[in-house]
Image 1: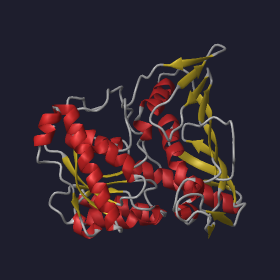
Image 2: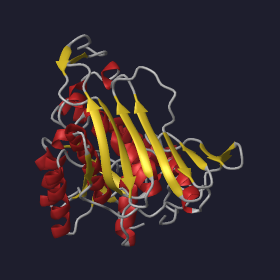
Image 3: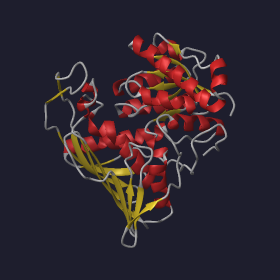
Image 4: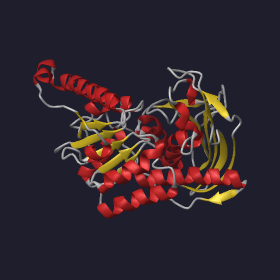
Length: 391
């Protein structure tokens, strides 16, 4: 395996917990430092990471060996700049709010560090282009969530499409409906500011899955609305506080994929309840039910010959969770291959979303200015371990 990729985490907010739970059990990665604008939060994250590392080591080597181990310490840096300057940081895990994604990514690249970040890649096309340009000039890697598409759910569905089980894909549907994140998030304002909204927040999961399944998007038609001017915090110490809604919260559109398939898309923070499927793909010979792309797993069902039948998992990283995209990037670095949760894919997904919003404002159909390759499929791999193949 060689030396692990040493990770510095920037942003110890709510999503960091999922990464801190997964990273210690991923081979080829080692969390070495963390920083946050709230130092107490960074210190808590470092302690959580150290405890998780001990637990993972105990599971792998035994409790006695873990107790004797002196490794696994996680430093708390005073700032992102200080973290990026550390000699024990090879790559930055960027878990800041969406509005800061580009700034942190560009700073990390300027400091000579690889970057893997939460979605979206950035808030604007110009920022995305700057990130890819900096990566190209420096030869550094940039990865971007979501990595849910690398799990058995989406990958098994992709294999069914690639194997021709539904014939030629002709159409797809993708629906994400909720009443809004303010019901559970204690600080939900950023979901309703520029860079947020249902499309930019949840769209990357669905669009990344659709690119894996059907290829890049060449044209979009859109419509959008903003039914409520204000919302209320629903939980935590600020419950009841009202805040302004600055973005459209109900977005719908039609996506034309390069291969000719048409996807009907709905992303909404204005639906209290629905029985819509997450993603379905329809072909000349059958249909495919795809699990929630916000999860790594889930049932994949094929309709062909008059009935729905489950498909056994046949592709993807089994047991995957947040952080597997970063592990895939580390493995790709060692193997000299492209990583799958790439900045190129994330830039295309961002461009599709922004073009859809442009089309909605202009009440028209617009071409998408970027493209990308379909990432390589993930062969069926057991839960990542030091002995697992390159995948």
